[in-house]
Image 1: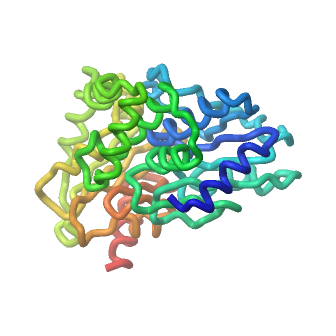
Image 2: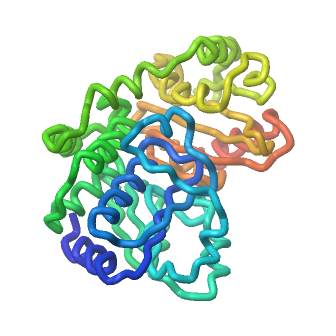
Image 3: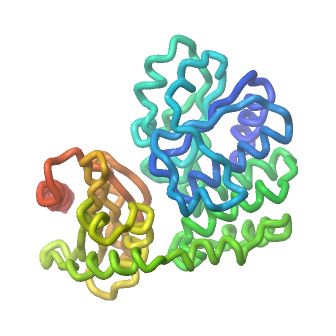
Length: 327
């Protein structure tokens, strides 16, 4: 934990009049858990604050009692009282979906950037980016510990949600000795590991399994690039009476495949954009570089991107073109 930056962030929080907490759009457990931990902490010290995300969290995440509701109301940007903005788990402001909002502000708040993605472009006035961390919540744990901030039960549960999400329940290569130590500390502080683990592992409905069957029936392998891939359309969701949250986890599950160097799933969103998720366990295959070439970001072994194209086929064309340009 960079001590100077950790202390600087603490001082900025103490001196702020009102704080805005922002995760990346389409927040996962790490992004939502990061915002929730900060929100519980700010409530504990009586610090006025707001939350904003460009998109809603999934119903699955919102069902966890320790996670706070994150507002999607754009009117929050009309409040000129926010003199500090903390952006969490996002490689850049465009990925967070707030680049234009911040650019158009009439006042000039301090921006703190806390993240663990190697593609982070250090957009903040203060940047706490630790690429070796398993999750942003692991970094926040270190920040709180360094500044001797008490971690209560809700804060601990929020942080553990992020750890379990980004390490896939401590099974993927992002799992480290430190992440396991942090998890142990959070459990000691009251986080219910079994509740969060059950939420993460036992979240499949009848509709989601039917949807997964359709998606896996389309599995193909790009023989040149050695990428296994598939896709989901809005029609698939409608025909199987499923929502987008029930497609979550497919990318991680595909990472268990023994074939190919990497896996890719494309998902058609309600707005017509195509969201892509890459996964790999191959140390020599960098999916973050591909995602970055497509306007996204992430980690060497797990990354994502969003494309504004006319169809799934057009999206695949862009992906293969990006892969070839990096070969």
